[in-house]
Image 1 (cartoon, rainbow, N blue to C red):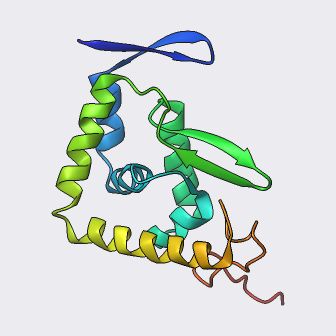
Image 2 (image 1 turned 180 degrees about the vertical axis):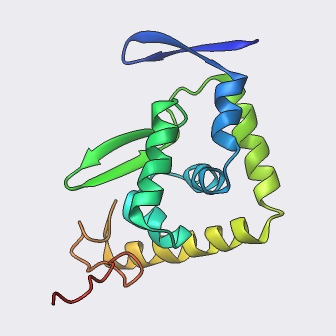
Length: 150
């Protein structure tokens, strides 16, 4: 099986095609990768765009990170995810295919439209990478309400 070898934290690591395809066999992970192909995003923005619970989004991102398909960095209280700086060529080829195919899928096109609205809102507020960090309150879709205590 062809292996791509790349450096991670100074260590060489291999990634085979099965590892890549295991990550690509879930709709939520495909949507996350398609969005991250357009640039780094904070978990709260991914949650807002996908309209999924934070726990679900974070678990899928952790799955992708543990397998080398995304990288993350902490910026204040927020985690920002991005595609790897030096991805193996097999990953690059598959992500390019994902972007081409995603252009034909209505759900992925809606995600891109939501991403554009989020970025426009952030640009207007002068906030980056996270709307909360820039002083703006989270939108209602990113702030989950708790049931009143009894």
